[in-house]
Length: 422
Image (cartoon, rainbow, N blue to C red; front, side, top):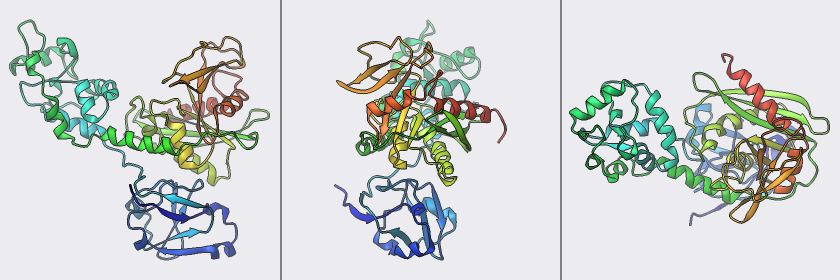
């Protein structure tokens, strides 16, 4: 079990005057050879040779490699911590560096020799999860193809050769020339590449590492009632431009009248694909940046609604849970589809009504119909620092149309921004 160190910290933004900074003490980095701060949205210089970490939430912090802070150009010989509530910080809880799944997939396909075949499912297993098979199939149709590419050796199950980035007849001709087809045009089962060959290309499947970190997030999730009714609600959603650019919008709404007070848009490159169960790794970076920008502008919601799952997730750690844990703020996940769980009572029929969603024998969320009685429901689950009841209550309180008001505006504004050049 990894050794844990107790650190004392408080948020930088709670330090208001220069005199308060006297409370800060210098800790030599040598004392923490594998520890740096992660949840940290911004890293700014503070005096010579000192790194100032601006944390968006209270500790405990998840940790990142110190190397990721070096581009700021600040010395890394010491770190400032301020006295405050104690927290145990585990060096083993590192946010994994996002893998380049396209590069990994190309490496797997390149390892298929002439005369051998594989399937999208087998490639997905080598990446660490069969859920990636859908993305692989789409990638095969859309990727930048070249003559030396071995993608024609990826076939469908049941003997079906399947599509091809170029002409399908050309794929058949190449496979026939390599001896991988039977006389009837179906592929030869004996040509199927052993799974061990693919697994040897990626001994540590990248999606398995991401699942491990999701389990760490799940263990950090805390479901509890809100201390007070929320006065201000936040909403965050992400859309994508034609070049794959991620555009996130944060919207700040007053709960009492549903008025949109402020909105902030952030753009970032996005290279992680959509894979069911791994949405957090696609949208977390840009959403964190959007909420961070909102906080720097003084916008701090009492409850943050996220277009993504909370604990209604195969590993009980969806996008809303990730954001909540990293930001140290109450979050609720809102999705348009039910990712997992069942509806024992079916969908609610009356406007503003709710039905419980059960996962593994527990009520982990609710299915809500809007106050206007929209034909399609949404699925709500707590992300972090809020329970099922409060999450449903305050989501329903700002739900006059198809989506809860904060999500409605975040969705609309991010979509509009994604259609405009950055």
